[in-house]
Image (cartoon, rainbow over all chains, first blue to last red):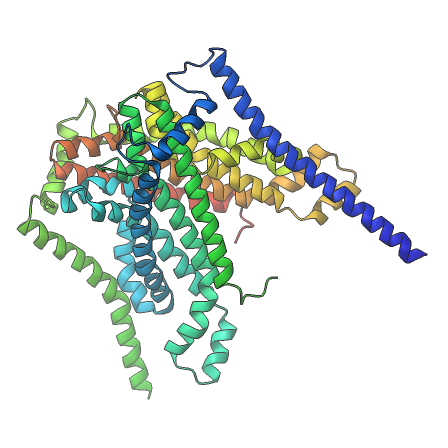
Length: 275
Length: 261
């Protein structure tokens, strides 16, 4: 009798929980819809000049139009996305390949830390955008130059987080490995590196966000394709719809990239016990 | 054995202090030799120093280097004050009330992934290149990390603490003021730190695209006039101010939330 009673209670609790969830989902949709509707009405009733901020319907129209049409910037949307991804990812990946091992070594071997730290501390406080003029003078305006600017934004969080991550390695684990006679290098690879991985991934996540958000600045230099380039052209030909489509696509691709990273993180850290 | 221990200790000391000095020496020597060979790619340290002194005797756009630095800082501070006010309140709202989170949070989530620099073109289209659009841009760049950190901090408050507050007869306002906000303070402060560095980057980007005064405009001016020494002077100033800001915030964090760390 008691057990049945409990089950009934459980079911009603679950039902309530479901109702709550549905309520919040509906509220989210209502939030977004009311935002769009107010925007649409403000444009249609003339509160906002259409030449400054086109209505959401017009932006959707332009987005669909850009998928298959080249004007005004000379590339279809897909080509722009690919061009931007190429720039952002090449800088981002280089930063991971150089930055993560560097940070790990600095965190493990004191002499590496002492030698690299002054150089790193010189680079760290300079905002990546401030590098643009120097990079252009050194390397021109090609893919390498843009990737280098992205590299600077992504490099710093990679190094800092790998450094902190490996510094936080549990000393007991290191001592146990030493007791079992493992050489320092083996401890580094088998204990230090794995235990730093969650922090390393947090750094990579920051680096990804940074590289994608510096993209527009890098592409404002000189480019013949890319989302930042499309926004620039949209501004010069006074087409706010193109500019906003560019912003929306940048936001969407950024969100997708960060979702992909979450998946990768789950895969690489699947051995970790979740507490 | 004792002697070898002292010897290795001496060697350790030698490396410990010698390596950073070596690194700095390498940078300086590298800079001097490179700039000696290619002065068009990298100005010599001496000419950068001369250019630095020149900014005080021969003002650019009617003000010295310090004036430009102040112009940038003033924009950031003004935008930060507004963003702290709005961002923390909004973060508390969506962290505290699930209904508000569902309704406003969804709008915020759509706007959030757009990087602040991507706003620059449309904001220039809307408001030109005066003072207001720059402050607005910095506001956008600083608002997002504040809201995220604040709302996450508030959501992470332990349920038990809230229940204890209820049992002791606290009302919503008391619980928010006495329990929730102090617990979330470290997280809010992390948001403040992120907002400052993000604001400092954004203001430079905004100034580089068009401004009469400010360090970002100096960078552009030096770049367009092929005056690389001026570019370096402004970049170094930018870096020093950025580093100072982060040191100040680190000290401030110890004062505001001493229980952290």
